[in-house]
Image (cartoon, rainbow, N blue to C red; front, top):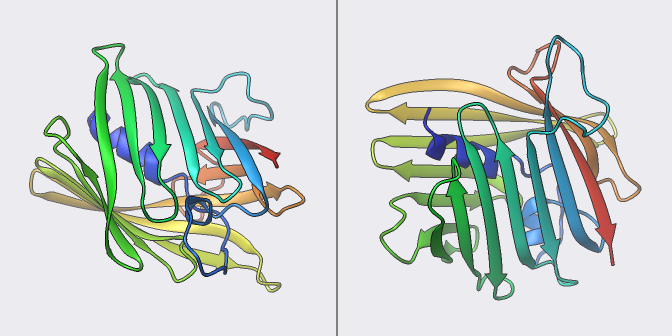
Length: 235
């Protein structure tokens, strides 16, 4: 899998975690955060030698997401340092509600800084395309939402690669979300593979926003492949 596919996985397999039943769209609901969230800082740490990390010292991924009081994203920065590639990205958002666009500056493997502008093109109330406004980016991303505006399905297409990620939500007897299982169907140069990608919520804060999440390779895996720590600031 090349770096474009890695980037796609990082962007879309980090959300959502909790359901939100309000009726008016904003991006905070798509990320499924509760309460007056102002800032979310996320660290991703690999699990090695079956030792599950308990702190963020050895993180390979960090992102910072900022929201307005109304739940619209203002900035989104990401930094990932993996053996196969590095990624640095900064995005500045404009618009409110469904009228969203953003300008992203990103660099892969410390290479040339690439800048692109994207716009959300809505097909109907629950489906939109994230469309690049120039020819620098040949990819297409299509997002389908649930009635509460959390992610249902994401389709990513570029050149000879296509990936569809479908989310299913699993609750306990008290209707508390315990995990999300993603069915990932990828076609690369005519070869199709299907796999699972699982997010298990281990702890939440007072607003029921997830603070520790285990990323599992299979639904019944004994150990996570990585751990995510989230820190929240509220208005």
